[in-house]
Length: 152
Image (cartoon, rainbow, N blue to C red; front, top):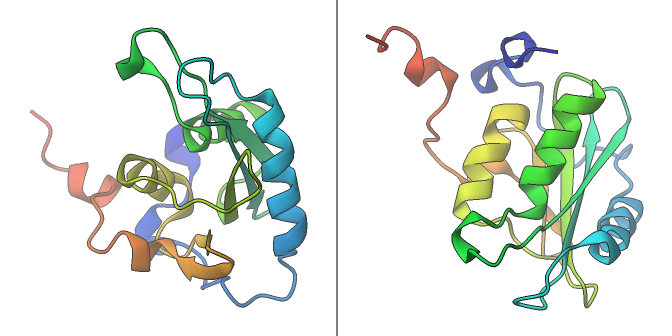
């Protein structure tokens, strides 16, 4: 599935932060399970992520460190790769990120921008146990609409 087949973040589906169909406890449990797959020999900080897609599938990711610390990747980035590779839908709807100790984490700024591409402003993000939209966490995001017409 090519990236251009996704809905643009500007035309994302309605806000899902309050939707009853999102089982946040199950999503957190999936994210926590992914911490066991984490590769974190340098920091020791294991992070897992799990997201619900618009087709009801769950995609997962974990952080992967590297001796050259600047090229390690966050759990949300591996989740995005799994989302694209799995053809699990066209949008991320809800996301939970959890540390190895079981506590929820907030996606870093880079990951918020990365997730915007696949979930838009209405992506529900587990924010310390309370869902918030990505639009709240990343106001005035840079997206596909900002790129069109500016190339060359």
